[in-house]
Image (cartoon, rainbow over all chains, first blue to last red; front, side, top):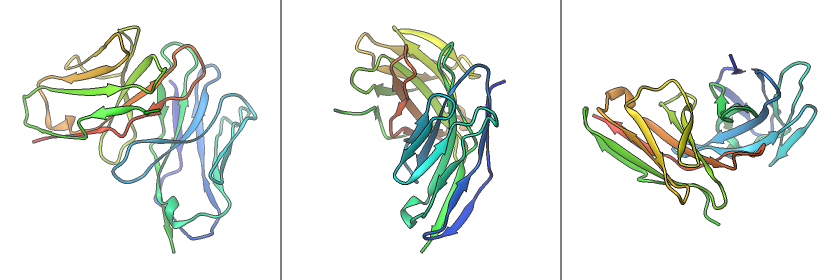
Length: 113
Length: 113
């Protein structure tokens, strides 16, 4: 079935370090791909998206490229800040049927000052 | 422009009781989806409503039911509450017939004692 697998956390980095959170997916057809961020006690915020192969989503210094050949959508940021500490969810949205969103298990990021 | 709004923000119930959660979609959106997020887990799809009908359903028992009103707002009802129903319930809205993103509300945190 359709699924998303992302690297386990927690990930602990020092401020200004480079961030990579790996995400791979399995899906029938051509889904749209997303990264959502969740801060403690809050709902989900869309961080970035890509709707077709080779699209690059970017926002607030975060980037991810839709790689169809490797079924991946890895999240990267060149220099993390303490305020980036949160849980990051990779997700896919099917573009047929009911368009439901399937989430990965989430990766908790801690950034130390 | 208001985003997705959910009410109440917090709720405490006891086992066996019934609960109703409410969601108003982002302006212009016609589709509402509900997700359950247990503590430390990823959101799980409950169901989706479009044109006042349930269009797709996840792996949740019939105790979970919903409704969509002509103004596109939606309710989630849970009967015969169990301790395991304690979670953050997220509502997401979108435009159905497009590769559009889902916007999430801040959620309702339900505690079942």
